[in-house]
Length: 423
Image 1 (cartoon, rainbow, N blue to C red):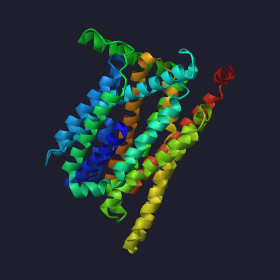
Image 2 (spheres, rainbow, N blue to C red):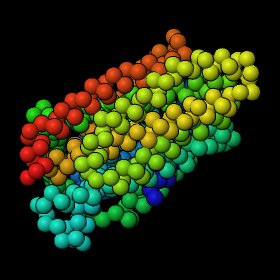
Image 3 (cartoon, rainbow, N blue to C red):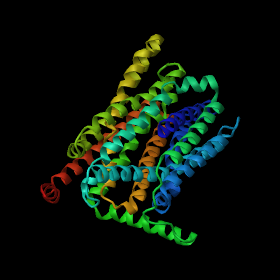
Image 4 (cartoon, rainbow, N blue to C red):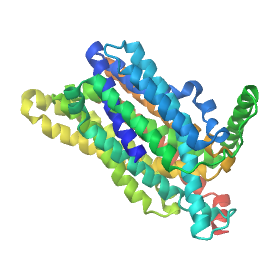
């Protein structure tokens, strides 16, 4: 419930910041940059912060991150806050997501492994203890997307009615509520790596954990490919990044911003529900095709100029164009769930002592990819149009995910993988 409420509040804040920036600057590039700030900030210190989830008690770390995020959003809610202040606050909130997501992912794996050991009699060293990891992550993503759907469905309308400052204040309340729920409802667990005795040794230990995780990427072909799949999800962020100018191009009213942002959430819920019921082997086989299908609908935005020309002749036809765009975004969202399988497979390949670091790093890679996709779309939209920006990023995504899918297929067919599967 804490995740559901916090995510719903975040969507109000996301729409509020996007509308504020676009109203003050009138620039698609700045609007895209504001959206990208949610994702690029973790590149600064995200890889190092990821290790905190293995050095400190994960429940306490998550609570601390939520309360700090509430503080930063409260400062952003100050009326007439300068644009630079909004950017800084957005980046701080995004940066705190890295240790939070690292701890959250590791805790989910721990909880489900404990259930398998305690309730189903699986031995602690049996790989079957992670059998619920993939379905559990799919369920968490589905819950998260329901929260996004609830927040985005009428977010633009709500923000226009209550104002941007009150929308940000509502986000503060959701962070505080989530912190209270986690503190009172989640069992505390000892940090697997153990806290360091001093500040210097803590930093050294974090770097050691980071090097350990990096060595896994360097030495394990499967991990490298999975990291690549996770990074490429960033291409799907193009439409969201320029959604405000895109709606303006479609000739639609501003309240349409919320439903279009919610469209890929609808797809995510549908896709996560389907993926939850699939066996692990089928999830991994479908990763390549789903990755391509997650960006192919965006490449179809090449048709957008024809649609806007129709709206120019008949302004009343904008609903049909919006419905078409919404359908494409639903398909993209449903297929982008491939990253759930990639993330689950990747985290099952690491020890619990670095599980938080691995989850934090994948969260950083995911957000960095989305940030690059978002800022690229915003820059292209500044010189072309929002529709063409989405089409270009989507077309590039088709090429890259196609190449990654071919490599993954070859890896799955390699003799080592086949012998492991038979064993």
